[in-house]
Length: 86
Image (cartoon, rainbow, N blue to C red; front, side, top):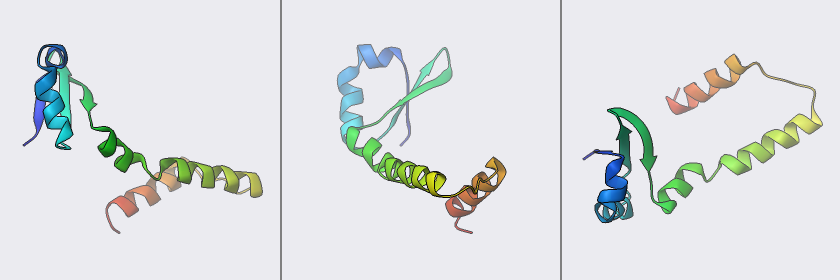
């Protein structure tokens, strides 16, 4: 079940939020009725970002070894196709 809480719960009900996060459930926090942030466990955050540094390093190496540059439209189109499994 999606957990949406007011940001004040981070202070007032920290233990409840901590238990949810320990179960790898993200907790969405709102401020004045609008989304403000997401609280994740360190392991979940690491899982989501594990390849980011590697991919950025690969991109830096490619940029250093070639003059080829891609337009952002092409990069995002490729990313969308990968995400959507096409």
